Length: 249
Image 1 (cartoon, one colour):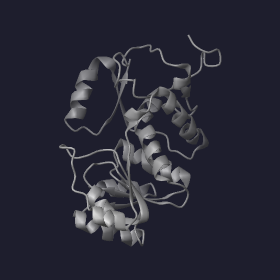
Image 2 (spheres, helix red, strand yellow):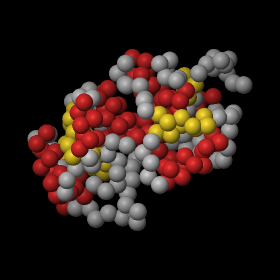
Image 3 (cartoon, helix red, strand yellow):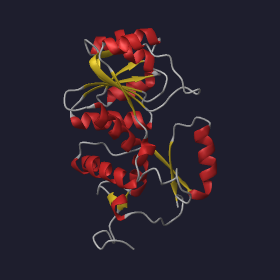
Image 4 (cartoon, rainbow, N blue to C red):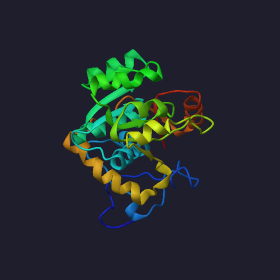
């Protein structure tokens, strides 16, 4: 049931009420506000669309609120689901992107896709590593790991922005405030739980066009499992699995 214009159409959606604020989001059918879904890009399958919700809306919010646009020098720390989405979305905007990852194999894979990358070393070396690619520092740094905020401050260009989506286990970090304010820097906290399905549908409409237009690569390397195996997949994720799990009802 729903508006006539949406009946029979493939739609996608995400938001804080789906799996966070109410139970039942693994059901075969869900009731949502009509404005809480968007038409699904024609080039995406349902499993691919399902893989985009939280990572892409989180990354999109970080880029929007950090002012990433064509020509922006952006450093993304971490290449998990959100970091990878941020790199692709930023490239689609015409930003100059640099990825910072833990392993040489990750860096090589990114470079094979035409994405400049560096391997993270000691925190005190990050500024020099970034300056070698972006003289004067990165205009925007998106730390998706929760562990590189202090070092990010020293790698920031004047009037730069640092977006964060995670924190250490105890929730605290020692921040070099002197270095931050002398650079005129700004911290941007990004939390996808601030957005309901209606707000997320507006984001999906905006970046979803990129899949059909070819400016965004299609999601790949998904591990699809029946819903009956859901508990096992969740255990694997809790134990550190980096696989992109999709549960099929």
